[in-house]
Image 1: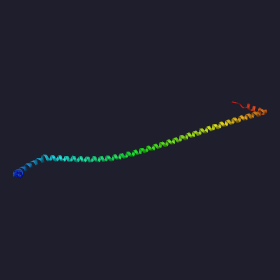
Image 2: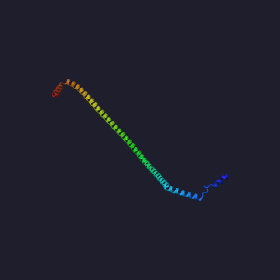
Image 3: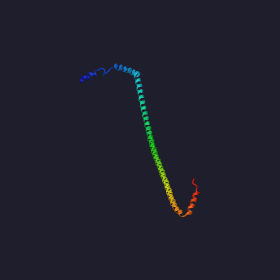
Image 4: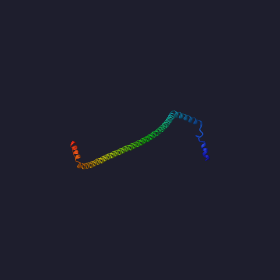
Length: 174
């Protein structure tokens, strides 16, 4: 192994002479000049373009995120408005239902009152008819009784019989 190290120490590439060093620097300089002229500019431009594209993409994503946040807040706002509108509609429907029920109860109450009033009126009419019938029956009965009493009286008294006949002849029947 020691021989190998001694062998490498004599190798010319590890210990370059001045001419090799000079031409290597010149070649590297030309290479560097050509690279800066033809490669570094396009690479730099490509890196700047890439940096610009990345920054644009980041800015667009930031704008998109802001837009999404704005849309989310608008959606939340719309959702809150929709909930409030739904609650309002439900309350209006409940109020309308209660109003309809109230009106229906009132109408039913009025109809019931009409029926009661009609029934009371019918009862009153039937009562009056019954009273009139009773009065008519009582009047007919009283007339029959009076007629029988008068006949009996008239049979026994000839003067009253002639007076009754005179009155009967004076009455003109239509």
